[in-house]
Image (cartoon, rainbow, N blue to C red; front, side, top):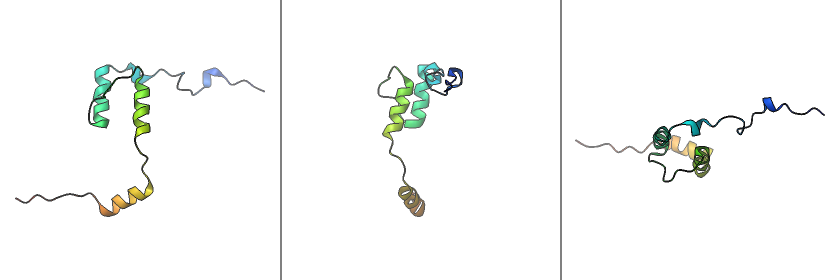
Length: 80
């Protein structure tokens, strides 16, 4: 049985973490652009922060997508 070539692995642990290469200011700016506010805490690993954020967001279901598409956005027209 042939051994896998370690130079060809696609593991995240092999690649450098570009999120950790960002300055704190750049990371917070990007976080605010996604979330709308700065992170409440900074973990040692920014990858873990993004992972926790992604895992905390509910997955959109086709039912939710189709019902919001039918009803459209609720926009209240302002009277002059």
